[in-house]
Image (cartoon, rainbow, N blue to C red; front, side, top):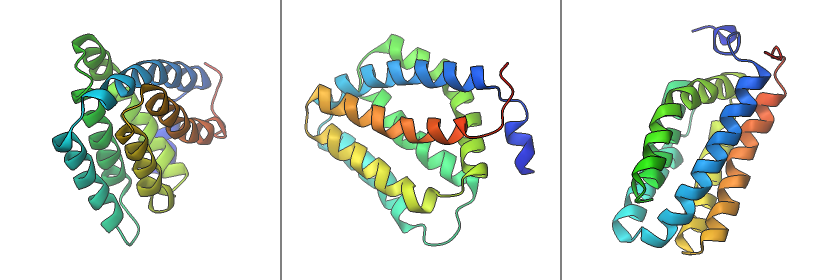
Length: 155
């Protein structure tokens, strides 16, 4: 799909609203998941991280989106909060569109995909809700800042 097709339907308002909603629910999910995840949850994350790390050439933007979402789905799966999981499912499609736009416009997944997710995994492993929430803030801010640099219409 051409690069412009990803971003032509996005607006600055869309990006801001989805980013702030995602940030709020993912901070809650991460704060809960970090105290509930044990070996199995971290093993699932590590398996996704290994896939991210093993990419040594240009990654297809769809594969980057798939790996990114797969990682974050684990956080939601372990947050033990059905309503947060439902909200995530309701915006996951929109997040997918934004990740596609981000990856198409800023093809740096090979540089930041593994390292940023590994850093987030390590924050979750501390078992400290505040550290997990800070890790989420830092992680999703990068994608948000990139999308804000696109020449998107206001509404």
